[in-house]
Structure formats: structure tokens, C-alpha cells
Image (cartoon, rainbow, N blue to C red; front, side, top):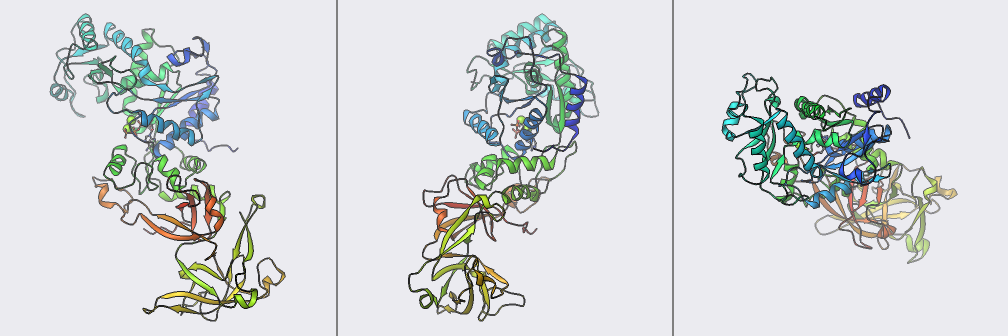
Length: 586
Ligand code: ATP
Ligand code: MG
Ligand code: MG
């Protein structure tokens, strides 16, 4: 419930709304829409954006930026964002990825129900239209079938400084191209024998305009259309057509597509001239992709981490995938906050990893329940317990679930004669300024009593096996005597007899280099060997029943989540999502 910061894309949308650029649009032009709405109705959506992943892998933090951007614009300006699978390439796409992508977008907090229509869009649903559009381009003299070999085509493309050379097939009659294109469609030619190319300008300074390919032969089964087609459109031709058919107004992509924009417009303008598409046409805009320090976002490299077992799958909490971030303890709100804080710009830059962690801290600070946990335990024996309270006494203590949210209630746990404390909370010979336990010193067991340290026990090798202390009577937190003794140190603890032993997984960055794959570097060379450590911790007994995905702040240690995969009823496993402060040292 706040106004998002302005950026160049918001300004473009606001300008278009003010000028009424898109008011005359109609909808109902895609096969999916036609089931719900008669074609020709004015479009009730003020703008249409789209998120068009190729279903060939799991989404990552970079996609989250694009999702928040595209769905966010639609939400904020009375529009709709189309969830579209860019599935024009038959070879790499799988249902597993389609499912994981829809899950990820929903989990991030976005949906695609609007104006009575609720459906996913698939680029492959437009193959019939794309084919007709290609035939039109041939007939109108804008495309030709080229029979040069791949090598000849490469050689004739020219370079940045030299113009390309026309193909000997460039001026063949349209009829001949059309007949050959139909033969391509009918499976009469093997892969690579010929392609359909746009006829634009082999001398264009923009290499993408030197007669780019439109259709190629690929004898391959498609996950959606099966064996119906053995020719498939090129991405650069398919994409503007998909956008136009769906009535997309603002087609937002990453900067590397900037040089493709003239071809995007060329395709749409030619098809509009031929009456196959209606004005106003979609416009492409580019923004800088997310680069995050210590993180790689290439799908191919992430795939390699998984298949070569450098991590435990796509949802390993160290992975920058949405499933990995989720398992690590990231919330949809934290990722939305992150996307908003980094904004969008037209220049490539690196975002510091701490920005991502900061967004998570800021989201969890106000809502994560607090709990005490001891990660590096040593036993503390309260030696005057039996004399004060009687043997087997358990002293009830309570603490707020959240220090600033009384409505979240109280948590309860018992203080007993033996508890676990952090090993670092005791020192035999402390340095100056150390206020925790050392012989003779007093400190408070948080939410419990002030205690005075009397010494420690050691094994034969001199290792400390237990810390010894006495309760200072009448000093319990929340009682009138609580302030009778002033102490500087406060110690977190968990009852040794009633606490819950739990596996806690601590994570560090997956790479030791800020730019793991920059400058020709092999990202595998900077894998951090200490990116995960597992400790046997003690936590408050009530955490036995914490549901998977629940977040906690373990006092002093950071934010943790109940692992959604490896936790058992009564036996949670905790992942550290993020430390309390940015302590990571470069
Ligand atoms: P790859 O090229 O590895 O197959 P991709 O990055 O092109 O993957 P797509 O599935 O095609 O992935 O991406 C879907 C959308 O997500 C695209 O519109 C793209 O602009 C956006 N996107 C992908 N990576 C990033 C990134 N790092 N930052 C911002 N947006 C991104
Ligand atoms: Mg892609
Ligand atoms: Mg890409």
C-alpha cells in the first residue's frame, strides 16, 4: 500500500495511458481468448505485459526481477500480465519446467486471472498463424527460401565493418519460394537443407537486419504440437507475432535484445500492412538484466551445478533459483521488496548480494517469531538448584513471541538445573570488556535468573565439558527483584532436559568470487568449499511442532526456516536464511 518508485518504464506506460495510445485495441484474437470472449470487443485491460520464459529450466532470481516488473506494471496500471511459455523450440522443453515455472510465479504472489479469463499462454498455440504469416511474407516479396549451406550463409553475412553479400536465391520468384516452403512444411527436405529468410538489407549496419532467418526445418517432436510440424519459427520472428496476437502493449525484455528491436518492428509492420495484424502494435523496451555479486544466473551453468552434484538439486538452499531461495527461507515479499529496491535501468550494473539479504532481513524483522537456540553448545550446571528449588524442579519462564508485537502472544519454556549455552559465552580468562560468564562474574540467563559463574569442569585433555554457576535468588526476569542486581551480560540458553535437539544448516555464499563467471573465468574454480556446514543445535522445545516453511529469528544467530523437504514431524531441520547483520567478510 505504497507508491512504487518511478522508473523509465513506468514513465512510458504513464505517457501511453495519458495519450490513449492503446485505447482502440480489441481483444479475443488468440485461440485461448476466443473461448471466453467474442473477438472484436474493446480490450478491458489498459495495458498488457507478458512474462515469456522458455520452459527449459528452473526460474532464478533474475527471472524474479522480470516477473515483479511485468506483473507489477500490469497490477499498478489496470492491466494484465500474460504468463506465456515461449515454447517454439521443440528440443529442450519439458512439462516439469512448465509446472515449476507456474508454481514459482504463483508463489511470488502473482496470478493471471483477469476479466473473466484465466489461462496460460503457449507460443506454440500460434504455429498455424505464424505459418500463414510466413506464407504472406513470401507472397508479398518480403521473404525467400535460401538454399545456401550454413557455411555459405555465415560467410556472406559480412561483419560489423563489412556489408554482407546477397544470396544467389534472394531474387527467386515468390512462387518458387512458396512451393519450396510448402515442401519444407510437408517434410520433403532434411534438417538444414534450406531456410526461410526475411528479405531486408544485406548491407544494413545492424547485422540482425541482414535477411534474418524466419523458419528452419527441424524433424523433432514438440511437447505441445507433437509431430504436426517439422518446421519451426525462429524466436526473433515468433516473439513479435506472439506479442501482437495477445494484444501486448509493452513488450519488455533484457538489453541484449536491443539490436533485435528493428526486426521486431519490421515483422509487425509488414504483417499489419498485409492485414494480418491490427494497429496499435506492441512496442519492445529493454532494461538491464539483474547481475548479482557472488551469484550466477545462467541457466546452463546452474544446470551444470545440479547435474555434476556440486549442489543437492535445483532447490538446494544455496541455489539462486526461486525454489532454492524459497527453501533457504526467502519470502515472496522479500523478493518483491528486493525487485523494487533495485529498480530498473537501461545500463548494466552489478547489484551487491547484501541488497538481497537486506530485503529479507527487513521483511522478516517484523514478522518472524523469536526463539532461543544454541548452535555450539556447552552444558551449564546450576549447582545451587536443588538447594533453592528442590531436585527435579522446572521453573516456568516466558518471553514475547515478538518484542514489538504483543498480539503475537507469549512463548513458554522451563528453566531447569542444567541448560545449554553457547561455548563462546564462557571464558576462563576473559579479555577486557567481556561481560558474559567467567569465574566470579554475574550475567543474566535471558528471561530467567541472574547467575554467578563459579568455574568449569574439564576432561583429561583440558577441554571444558561444563560451566558451573549458581542462581542469584530473587532476580527472575519480570519480578520486582529483577533489577536488584545489575549485570551487563545476557546469555541465551536452552534447557538440557526439555530442549529439542535439531539439525541446523548454516550457509555461506556458493562462490568466493564476486564475479564468478566474469572475464572468461571458470565459475567452478571459485566454488566456496565452506558454503554449507551442519551443526547439532538445541532449540526451545515448542519448535518440535513448527510447520515446514515457518520462519524464526533465533536470538543472536539470525533468521531460520523449517526446511520444507527434510523436516519430519517432531523433528525439524532448520536452514539459516540470513544472519542478523551483514557480517560477511570479503
Ligand atoms: P537462457 O538464455 O539461459 O535460456 P533466459 O535468461 O533467456 O535463459 P528465459 O526463460 O528466456 O530465460 O527468460 C524469461 C524472461 O526472464 C525473459 O524475458 C528475460 O528477459 C527474463 N530474464 C532472464 N534472466 C534475467 C535476468 N538475469 N535479469 C532480468 N530478467 C531476466
Ligand atoms: Mg530465453
Ligand atoms: Mg537468454
